[in-house]
Length: 392
Image 1 (cartoon, rainbow, N blue to C red):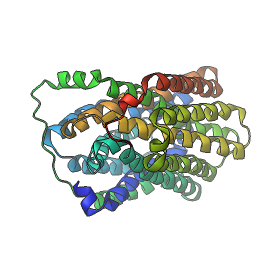
Image 2: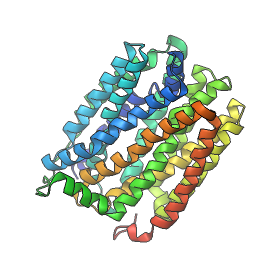
Image 3: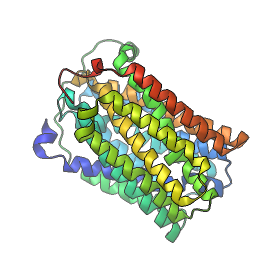
Image 4: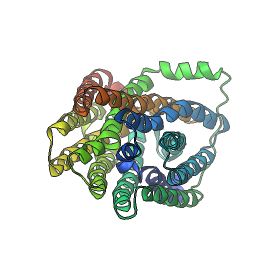
């Protein structure tokens, strides 16, 4: 409860700047890869590499954090990795190094396990979705500002400018994060082998089911607003500055949805209704992308897409740790985030290969169908039995 007593503002600002540092160049990333001579498949690999390294690092990081009983050092290390990633991006125009440095940004994002678990300690277990909704709001604010400015900086100063902007954001995030208070929790004394502990975590249906659903929502995000929607926008004539506007009007509703989820919607609607509604809204908006040939209409459809996705992830994230003891929450959150990284890696990689072979429109249609499948699974898997004893 230390964060609650001393104030959450340093945490909010550090979170916002952390995600700012990694998303300044997202609006121009896939077009930038194409400018460097990469194929659509290569663009998908670059986007997906970010999720691949997260998939590898999040479980061991979560278990390590539980073992030592602290989170803040992992947060600071993640911010440092993000800062260096932006700098490395800025000093090269090598296609293959672009793949490597986006993968390094994924290492930075792996520290999100520590961010979410430390922040959730300031709330009782029954309010975990509320905590994740508020954190998602500040995440969205950082991403929104980053992508709006990133597009403008690319327009004004050239392709490399957004990378340097992310580097500056990372430095500021690190300085603010030094002010975050932390009271170490009792470290996990579980003598079980790490693999057995991981299997035990994965066998918990409450954790496993929402982790599998999160694969779908992350695939949605990294195929559309963080992946191929900007590339499609350039095909219908969008400028670099308009790519930033597209990202702004996608992430702003995403942040708003996270805020509403964290403050009122879950309490009134319940988790299942929210997740199903979010998946269906995102599915409709994704299916509309290849049918849209005017930039203004694309903005409207992707605002709906961002709002739908913003409804889903905070609820799933909160449910993943709502039943888990405090000293094992990082392990559970690491499992959840490692599993959903499959969507961040697999979604854009598969859609990139598909788009290379039969066109980008097919990738959007298939992604929409997968989102509808996610809505169906949510109806089946998410029930009131997953609520903790209190009310959200």
